[in-house]
Structure formats: structure tokens, C-alpha cells
Picture 1 (cartoon, rainbow, N blue to C red):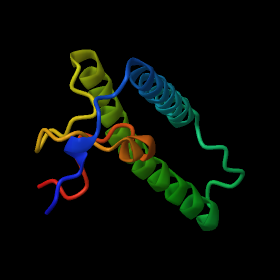
Picture 2: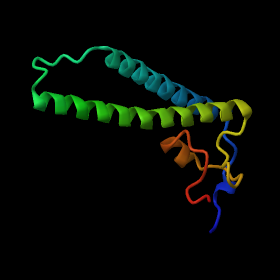
Picture 3: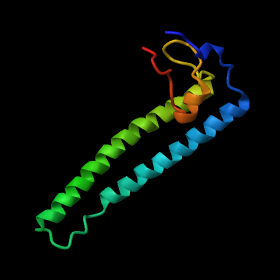
Length: 120
């Protein structure tokens, strides 16, 4: 497999600042989601008829979706925080597997990427 990432220049200070800003904004958004979800979980369900099976099923499904989303969001938050640590260490934009540069186009799509597509 040919590697094209080594040909890429290191990220400039301006590019690093751009990615730090994007990561920080996404980190704040996800933390806000977690706070909102935690507040919702503390509220008692507002069902008009506690014996309505349809309402109970809907509440259960909504809760399951919220839990699933928060698990995915939690993993993303961990990846974002890891990317921010890599920015601090000066290793952002370099594959953890091969040491090759991660293409700018990939970082624009997935700013928390730590590997290149196809790295094993």
C-alpha cells in the first residue's frame, strides 16, 4: 500500500489553532449534552397516566436511545480530549500506528483522528 501522507507538510501554527478551536467547541457541545441529559434524568417522568402502556413504552424507548447516544458521545468526547492532549504534546496530525502525517482532508472531516485510513 502506497503511503502519500509523508509528503504532507507539518501543520502550521494557524492550522493547529484552527483544529484546537474546532475540538474545543465540540468538547463544550458534548459536555453540554451530558449536563442536559443528567438534568433530564433527575426529573420525574411527566406521564399523565402511569398505567398507559403506550406512554411507558415510549418513555422506555426514549431512555434507551438517550443512553445509547450518550455512550457514543462519551467515546467521542474521550477521542476529542485525546486529540487535545496530542495538540499539547506536539503529536497531533501524526498517525499513532505508522508515524505518517494524517492528511489535512482527513483531519478536516475527523479532527480527532489519530490514524490514517487503512492503518493497521
